[in-house]
Length: 352
Image (cartoon, rainbow, N blue to C red; front, side, top):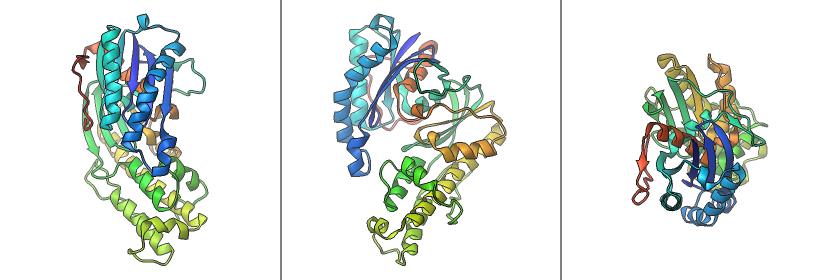
């Protein structure tokens, strides 16, 4: 089964064709990231306008580069939530129109669950991808970490799962962005902090971990601790404006703050995942979402987990159409979430 996946939940316009949920024939992504750097975050209106410009060329390139034609596409899968409303609308309306005009079944896909399914893609002839050697086994524990989501989910099979815990405030990726802004690093914060942290001491500062319930996360306290630490390092109190801190911090201080924050933030999610692993004893453990490409996260998992964990390629951790096509395949196979192309709505606040 050849499934075309379409993704437009935030600032990436993605389209991909995946065969039988495991073989990726194409994966095309157009990002508007550079347009948002100046603002220090994604501007929804700018992102939506970028999708309008990019979505048809991205889909056409994905089909052309796959070596298939429209007659070979068996189904269309599209992200209908969660995400930014205007961005979702572009992808869903495009997918609905194509489903009608090309006479293809349409499947509505949960973006957050889609990230997990990037780990099920195991084959491709495309250059530059390092994929898992086999798909995860059930029961499966998934740690979903991104700019908008931090969740711990236990799957008994493809469509039966239990949400064990989630963030009660900032997602971990959002915390990376905010801490980067405090110490004067460019957006997006995750890659910026990871790069600067390489020259810092991760144990230089003793930052706090949240004391949440068993599987829930919180990063607002850690973010505030970084703010107070930065003010203290330059000899100022809590009244000193955060936007002026970066001018007073030297490079060594920034590197040590970045390294210490990254270590504690990652430890916070790995601690909870390890507790869940010991309680539920899954056959496999996967990490998903943009933060899943973080080297410190992968290092801590390798050092602390008792089983071997395979990771998908970093290019499939960020938003892409391949993960949507993969999950769409399983929905089509089991006839789940088949949607009416004349009425499929977006759901910006969709949860797992």
